[in-house]
Image (cartoon, rainbow, N blue to C red; front, side, top):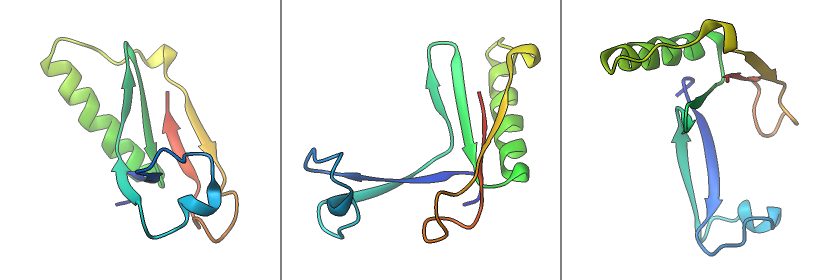
Length: 95
């Protein structure tokens, strides 16, 4: 699943308690391929190739709806892993 980023979350509304977020009970995990709001989209990925696949997929989908990805407004951002225990790969995102 290098084309997505895994997000862990609590089912009991204790979002800001990191120790509880790492617990096995009352937690859930999802893989996020894209985040959209209004006319913005963020495509997180753990590899440049995965990011390109996601961008190709969303661009194709947008074209079928008559929309176009604005290349001039597109930004690629990388975030190095915060610690080796979480991920060995940086997160690539298109905004």
